[in-house]
Length: 106
Image (cartoon, rainbow, N blue to C red; front, top):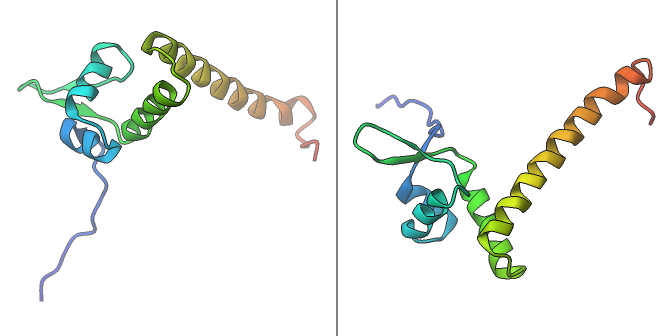
């Protein structure tokens, strides 16, 4: 009988696994990194590594480009605005209970 270890999701993904998961060619992922639409870290040998949420972000970029016909500069702006809105909503959610004496309005 063999004993196994529980599988864990890796905290970083390779270029090929990100491209495969997102359904795009690795060259497109490299272009997105060059245009600063994606962040990648590199190891000593120069291989790119990505976070686990990168395939979803690639999907968002591809949908914005194909469905709304936005150019990549506009996509960068849309993604930045979406992140700003998300953080402001989180701050507002954290602020509301304190401003109302700790009681939610609902």
